[in-house]
Image (tube, rainbow, N blue to C red):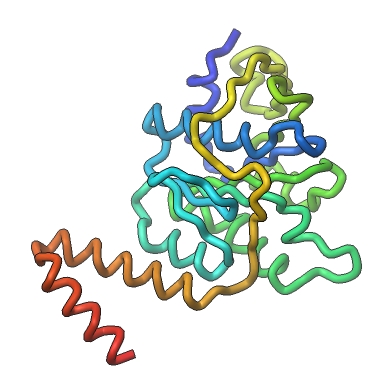
Length: 229
């Protein structure tokens, strides 16, 4: 039996950036995605994570818009990053028209996110609701189907060299130790100006700290920047 560490390392180091999670309501999709992220952080396969759903962990950032996600990706280009988009079917799918958010999300997330050393977990309820684009092997390296709270099927061509088949059943999946709001609503829109502004201020703070400025100096500098804007 292949170890989870070997499998996760294989997935995280592959150029294709997306892993799709599917399953019925209350099957533990979000919990499983966070468990993958937790193990990725523990085994140093990831440096930092973000999600559109509320997570109580200082290694996670809450991002609720595509523009803010793009800013975050560009801020830490050399860091190994993961973004988890919960309820992707609701946020990106419209049965009547292809929304502007859905159109713009596909291009950077599908082909460019890997240039930022990042991975993307998309969480859907049903596999048939996942756009064909996200099932293309050039951008999606695995599909994780939750069969229940502790059981899942992982389908990926990367499995074949390891176990001579492309589907692996994993059981006794533990609950993630990352606290999150099970009933929290994962918002995601095209833009959130306030969120983008806070990200840039945070980035400026990090740069000033690395340059040796004291807290009072940083506050004064950022105050001037805000006043000028």
